[in-house]
Length: 90
Image (cartoon, rainbow, N blue to C red; front, side):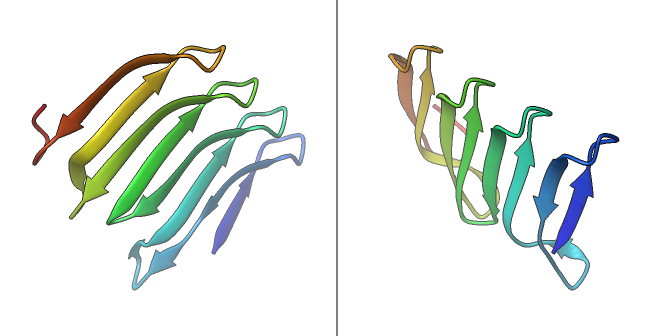
């Protein structure tokens, strides 16, 4: 695991690698410490958050590409749009 910091010492990201390649959970944080995004390589999900902590977007991946449910939300948490992808195509 690699942890990167902002100049002020606040955690910027946590990254996992295996054999020199991205692997497992990755997280990135805003300077205020709030989670900005979280993703899991290679099969699983990617989540993006607003700076207030509210979920902004959730995307599923299979074999490293967008596949399955995709959702985007407004800052108040209300669903903006939802769709399904198959091999990167809506």
